[in-house]
Image 1 (cartoon, rainbow, N blue to C red):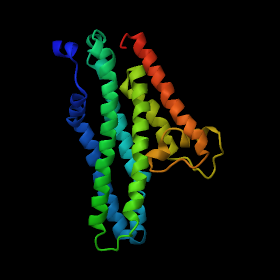
Image 2 (cartoon, rainbow, N blue to C red):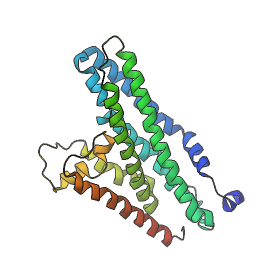
Image 3 (cartoon, rainbow, N blue to C red):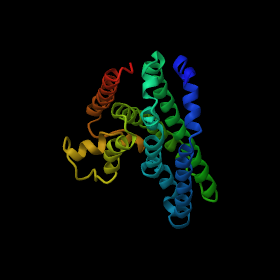
Image 4 (cartoon, rainbow, N blue to C red):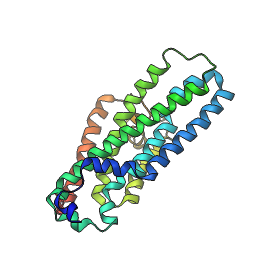
Length: 249
């Protein structure tokens, strides 16, 4: 306890803590296992669209896995002090009031990216292994890599917003519901029947769904180019305000 009060954990310690969290690897393994099953079924029963379906990995299974990784594991670091009753210790140190907060944010961003990289490598390996007897399209790898870059942007953005929410309210389950509900609902919204600026349009495009699915937002991109920075900054300000109320900054 004295060591925490004096120096506090380094960002490396935050990363090690996440890497040693069984749930982090369980989510990744579950996602990779599910991808293996679906890839095998696609190869056996939908061979003509096998490579297309593989390229669309982020559209459903991949993005859902990343979302679970962020909500179940990564943002939990922002409520753990309340759950472990170390809030008063953190609040009494200069390190705890500021540096730990930003180091957890940085570590979470890095581990979100790391998770995306692991899933990317896994999908490429699974796809090439199962489909080795068929002809690999020349542009398949390039197309999948371009989608992955967008996913990384979405993973970092979604993590930051979810982390700010979790830090502001100090409740992990509630944060999972607040941040996970709009994302989950967005998967069921048919973009062909929604109109610009209605409620479902905001839900469909306004919570990083498109990015996590490897797509840039095509509907009024200029508007969303303003929306996302404003949303991130707004939730960040809320987090800072709540921390100042608790004397954590």
